[in-house]
Each structure stands twice: as structure tokens, then as C-alpha cells.
Length: 81
Image 1 (cartoon, helix red, strand yellow):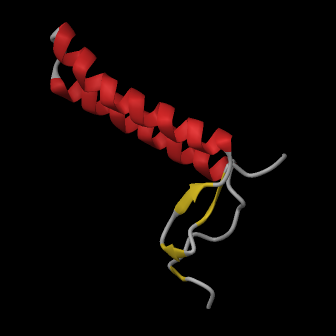
Image 2 (cartoon, rainbow, N blue to C red):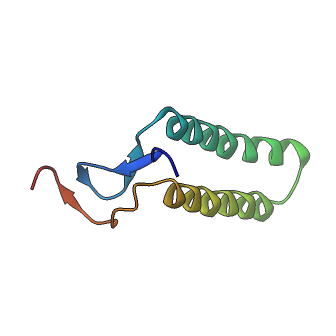
């Protein structure tokens, strides 16, 4: 499967990018999520369609993060403890 793209954060809950592929995936996701409302506004589409697209892309990104993670359980972490 190769090197994981995302790994557990040292403090708090969640994952963070661990490789360049993870950083690129995050950058592309943020760019697309930012562009969707602008494009939808320009085209005159209803807001609910833009929100549905953003919701679907967010779920798809979470699945990607889960598949490309180090597969550690997601829990709150306090650093080295």
C-alpha cells in the first residue's frame, strides 16, 4: 500500500498530512471547495446544488483520508502520553 499520506496528530483529534501526496490532496480539496460556490454563483445555479456538491466532495475526501491513513484509531491524543 506504500507510505501513508495521512497520520494521527500528536495533539487533539484527527489526521494531518504526512507526505507530499497528502499535502497535494489537501490543497486540491481546498481549491475545489473554494471554486464550487464561485462557479455556481456565476452559472446561477441554486445554492442547494452547490451545497450538495460540497457535501459529496467532503465525504469523498474523508474516505480518501481514511483509505490513505496509517489506520490508527481516531481518538483524542495528548502528545507523548
